[in-house]
Length: 356
Image (cartoon, rainbow, N blue to C red; front, side):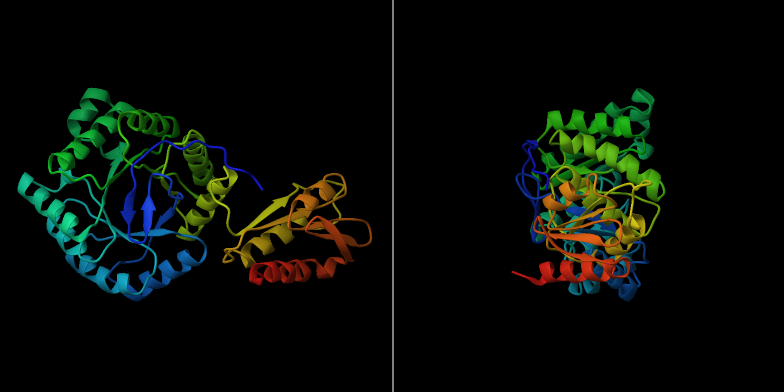
């Protein structure tokens, strides 16, 4: 298993429900529902499904007052922190803040000083933090005219919103500076990270469909996380939100920043392969995605790298002519046939998962 040697940037801790973001707190994975928020049943069902596979914080959108009021029942039926996304209407924010664990809102976009003060007071009274979310595609006009689509524009926009809150003595703030362009996104976060100690929510916004979006997100967030920048993440895909959570887990695991669930080491296959590695890995990933206990499984097609990888894993299978070799805790335990591989591996995985 990888060991984390990343020195994280020093940031303040902000409490979000039962979790913390920033400081030395683990980096939580966020996702966002795709349901109509007023459809409480469907929204809660989707949240439960995301939580099962490792989502730590969930965000919903509240574009209407009815959606804001539905948050009460949603919150009562889930166990992970609930974040609401509000744009422009301070009245929706005042209703939503009664029920949620964090407000995603840009204070400069909700009206005059009195309206902002009302929202800030409500957040302070309810002990609800805010996330300022700056996106490259929705910059203020004057900043666009000054910088164009430059990272510096995002940073200045974020600092404006931060100052509004600081002038009202509010500091329970998390900041994101998202762009669909990876280099600009990286530079914006680096610049902002140098200026403040606010915790940072990382994301490559509008990253695209499953594979392109996963690659862009991995490159952008991976580079920043490897530098110690980033306190929570969301992978934005034009896909089922479960895929966002899966990619997020893999990003954190690959950097040694998360160690939970079934992690599979597998070979890319070649002419030496004696088992159907691709099929086995796909089936194992699908059938073990809800397991929380850290379990390392090696699925290797032949004896070239197979024994070494399997000895390092909790459980391993190495393809061989005739029958295949099963490893457990670094030792060979038995040989199995093609038809037994999936059944035996799942049985062993479940035994480890359910053990002490």
